[in-house]
Image (cartoon, rainbow, N blue to C red):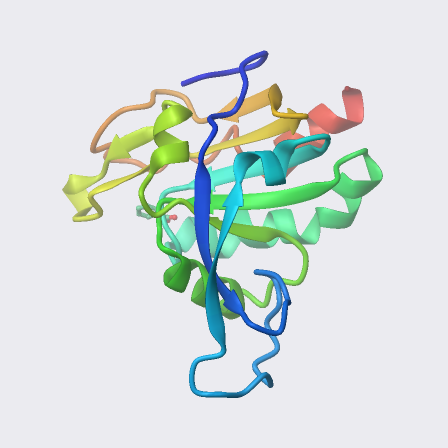
Length: 186
Ligand code: BEZ
């Protein structure tokens, strides 16, 4: 995997968003119509340029550890991270925008933003793309959490032992607590 001092991969993410102009974190379903959505493209520059952001990545939407601990943990600590000089917090997964949007709604998220890396291009550029064929998942992301300042990685908390078809699902180094520990001492 790439690490501290490296630039994040340059790529684009495709989102399907509501046509009322609300962003990916908007969960109000009152904007009616048969299909009130349109496709939008977000570049890595849109996300990272001139900003200090936290990004955490995980093996899949709706999976147990990610849904029970990782996403709720970062959501609950969003204000604390902001108070420590972070502009935004993003979660990224090798899932498409339909899946990521429904997961976001299911999680009742109000703060962190969901990035669909459906084609895995960003994750591949991070060196974090791993096979999970042992679970029928295809290729997904190894778990990590990082702090990125203006596109350059300033902190990386990746799980140890990156490998294909890992039998376990380590969640030790990429927790919100580890990111907070770094931010508080940075
Ligand atoms: C989990 O988040 O618990 C999980 C992730 C990937 C595979 C299986 C479980």
